[in-house]
Amino acid sequence: MPAITDKDRRKATDIPDAVERLLSQMTLEEKVGQMTMVENNSITPDSVAEYGVGSVLSGGGGNPKPNSPQVWREMVCGFQQAALQTRLAIPLIYGVDAVHGHNNVRGAVIFPHNVGLGAARDPELIERVGRITARELLATSVHWTFAPSVSVPHDLRWGRSYEGYGENTQLVSDLGAALTRGLQEGDSGVLACAKHYVADGATAWRERRADESHHQQGSTAPPQESAEAAPVDLSLGQWQIDQGDACIDEATLRAIHLPPYQAAIAAGALSVMASYSTWNGIKMHAHRYLLTDVLKGELGFAGLVVTDWMAINQLASDYYTCVTESINAGIDMVMVPYDFRGFVSTLLGAAKSGDVPAERIDDAARRILRVKHAFGLFDRPISDQSLLESMGSVEHREVAREAVRKSLVLLKNERESLPLPKDLPGLIIAGDGADDIGLQCGGWSISWQGEAGATTDGGTLLDGIRAVACPSASIEYAPAGEFDSETRAEFGLVVLHEAPYAEGFGDRADLSLSADEVALLRRVRDRCEKLIVVLLAGRPRIISEQLPMIDALVMAWLPGTEASAVADVLFGDYPFDGKLPYSWPRSMHQIPLAKLRASAEDPQFPYGFGLRTRIDPSALGSL
Image (cartoon, rainbow, N blue to C red; front, side):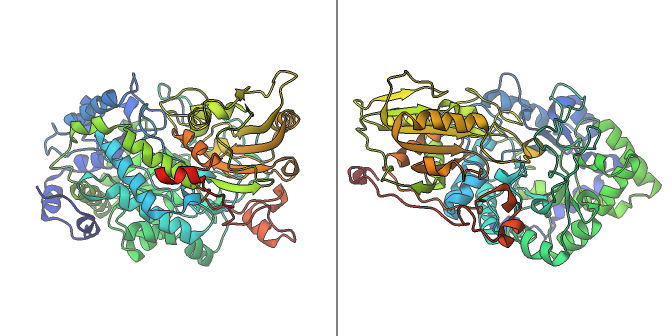
């Protein structure tokens, strides 16, 4: 069979005759099965075959044991082989949140989060990131990633800020389209999913905290082995903006938040995920005007619309209403994710009663079959096993290193503190983030929320410094900055980090440095001539009071597994090229973005800011 090209996929509005013939043979039960997406630990291959399930997914942390590429592949193929045993042999499509590489799989390359790629501003690089991500996904026979996120975040308190490429609509449109092209390119492409439709980046901060019983089933995902809802910790501002209400007019929605979806669709995206959020009081999963009239009608979107995790449950206290409202609004596939039998039974009942019209069921099933056809799943439901050989390869990691280098933003550089000399006479280093892969990767890394420690393979900033500096250089590392009383050095390097988080768990009422972080800065400041600070964070931090004590400030974002490449730039083998994708506020009074724009004071650093350093002449021969 000839390779499937991007052009073929963009012509998916032409429904293949094979899809129509297949649809005509399907029973109502088979169509509803195709509309069902189930979490991997909540279903067996036998049940996939029995119910004709259209999709299985691994949520964040939904990993097999042991977590390895080979075992991942065996798990996915087991579900696929079961699907192929059904009456019509309709393949399923396996989905994951591969939002910065195949980030659930230990040993895969984890790229910088989108905010770092937004700082790099290099669409060609991001296409390559997409191609590598697709290749590593297909190594495990996964054909669908819930990426790119094309949100336009305007409130840095939001825990999903790092999922956005930046605050500028054109930047997000350009880079989201680039990742879509890379993910879906040619015969080795996977299905991209533009999310979260639409205007989730415009949700308003809720001054009154939601209580523990607030319906946030989707994002307070329980541990994979449990169906009990996890408690919501509200102590730091969690859930005060995520899944909120975007109180904006339609002109603003269309000017700022809709264009990235138009760009992704033009680039070939054939799936879109609806947002948990609300637009002026109406939940997006029930918004027929935006899902059907605008997305499918006005924008001509020919692909499928999928829900977020358990999101339809938020529409009403009555589950029957949740199902009928969401499907009639334009949802095609429901991420159940646990009680798939209950969902199937409910939708079948609604269809048989006429509360969900037969035409709507047919449209959803047709769209799902069309997407599977466009990605060759009927001909190649199981990917080439030889792709496993390139998983986490040196070649893939080098592209990630390039992405890290280009994402770094130099915010301050006084007294020619950077680049560092490779034969530096003395360097003291502090901060847990200097030598912790989990902290440098952040959320959505092996587990849903991410965690500290040696969670996967990669290199840390400390590894990179030791590799780049001359063997004779004096380097001392004390994570807490507690050095011997007589220790003094010309250079001090402090790595500050945000604790890993994802979604509403990352909502923060205050982005200022903590008392412990400030104390760490002071301990190292007292022991060095020049203080360099590297921030590992998914968003700007409020640092105005501490800035005078810092000689050089570097924003490294959440660089992923290849953080050792930060050292290449610190030592001048490569220049600082990154530019801020977000305006950097001077205080919390300049958040959200509308307040900053109305402020009489300038931001600490404006959108697009970034200093450059010279390249070490001795490195030119290796570039």
